[in-house]
Length: 257
Length: 239
Image (cartoon, rainbow over all chains, first blue to last red; front, side, top):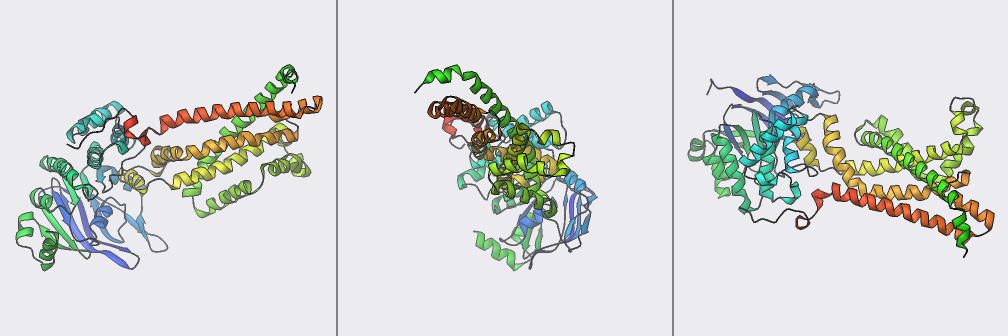
């Protein structure tokens, strides 16, 4: 594993919201091609961890590296931590992509417009090239016929697949998934997981916060279990699921089934 | 009722119509151009920038348009500073004063309409824009404003119509708008009913046109809100 390229690295990341310390020193590195499932009870800091990676939340302390570049943070006078350089943050975000629990498609744009928005306006890809690419990705996620539809006209599963196409369109280093199936009706979960499985098989680097144990066990190459703001388990799915190091994980698994 | 009075004096009404249309459209366009940056700063600017904008909006929403117009047309002439300045040739003219008052008035109302619409942008869509690496400026231009304009349109169409009707106050400071034309006819022939009924018909016609145009814009802009059954999309069962 040591010889592989590190896409994202976190070193002793801390984050608190007022009195509540959500992340209590998380260190972890995601290598190119890894599919990491982040598991944990609600409130364990999974989503916060993911949101720290693309700086939707700014860590209070610790170091964060994205594709070899360290994110420079600074303290304000009232002792909050903020990024020192927003241009750097924008550049780093454009190398990552995020798929949200609530899809968060831009509702006034068609599906095609949603998918080409960041390539055209952030990455400055020529429009026609972006459109061709968007069509390819919408085909890949199985909604090639929805180009002109608006998000509100699609089912939840279709919206989430469109959101995945939007994420793919920027050809990111890493795709961050924040509970991508948690807002879906049970019968729509499968179609989204199927798309994610395809992406994993293509060797894309993914960090997935999820409650889908099946996905974590079968698709991911590595499982991380977070509890009370700390990494409790970290290893390949077989080891973690069959020989967990902590009782907490066993309890968590039992509660899930 | 004597319609011949009206028919013989239609040219006066058309002059009035022209003035009403010019006053209202210029003040609406300038007011909107002012309101967009003001509404953005009102939402995202620092408190020192927000305060004067709040004061501006509060003053123009808190006082009658007629009083604002009087303050500018009659009031400014009282100050030597203005009388001796390069601006005096403008503020001396009733037409300019009306335009000035209307523009600031509609800018204040429109700022408030847009402020609310911007504030109501779904937070998830803003996060998606940030996660995509958009700069603040790009996000405002591509995501927040297009989304906010759509939300603001129904309230803004009201503002357009209020401005049209409010513009009748221009007749008080000697301007021959539609109402001004009616007042001329009335004072000339002592026939208030015919004179003002004709003015009412002109206002109704313009309002009709505004409602029609807004409706067209809504069809175009609100496509994403239309129920699926009325668009060309067909309802599909999940695969």
